[in-house]
Amino acid sequence: MKVTLVQAISAWLLPVLLAVTVHETAHGWVARRFGDKTAEMLGRLTLNPVKHIDLVGTILVPGLMLLLPGGFVFGWAKPVPVDWRNFKHPKQDMAWVALAGPVSNLLMGLAWAITARIALGMSAENWVALPLLFMSVAGIFINTILMVLNLLPLPPLDGGRVLTGILPAPLAYRFARIEPYGFFILVALLMTGVLGIFLWPFVTLFLELLASVAGMKPGYFQTVLLALMRS
Image: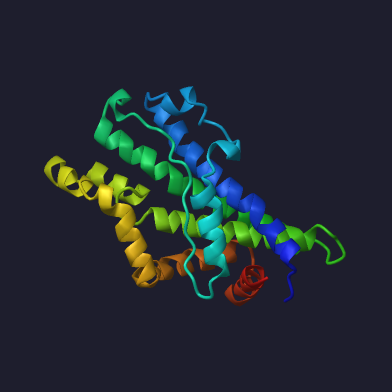
């Protein structure tokens, strides 16, 4: 399957922006539900991607990693500000706020899978069908990556915050002290290939499940994905 560079950029742009924007907004929305309006007051409770994009973490790093053969893609956005002091049950409420991000990516992955199914049901002569399919495959992939990566139980990732919220207080306090070093640990895991070895089975599992929802065989899904990544 041949995909031009313009087609690939067009396919990735909207899914990536939505994946990052909705993920961060979900954190702020759940925080507000639990009583913290910090994100709303600072203008971060919005679907405007400009408010959430980090030039390095959202654009440069993922873009460069997509160019590396066999590279594992990851990035980050501007974290939505949350003040745990506004929660009635800070420890548990923070866990729910953290979980909201990966859950939003799962729901978006499902939405893109349904969109892919619609695209596959269109006539081959319909000019919308192929671009919509490309965009849907990109959406499934990027949301799966963000969901699985953020569920890694390592502070400051969402999975680390969830684990902090469910651990007994003494253990949670000790575990949370890893946070200042979490990013460096993540980069080390990435550079040594351990991150990909650990996470890729989970990524593959969810990609196969979503491809099934989309009505695509895993082999066909991988063909389209590789064409988009190699353009």
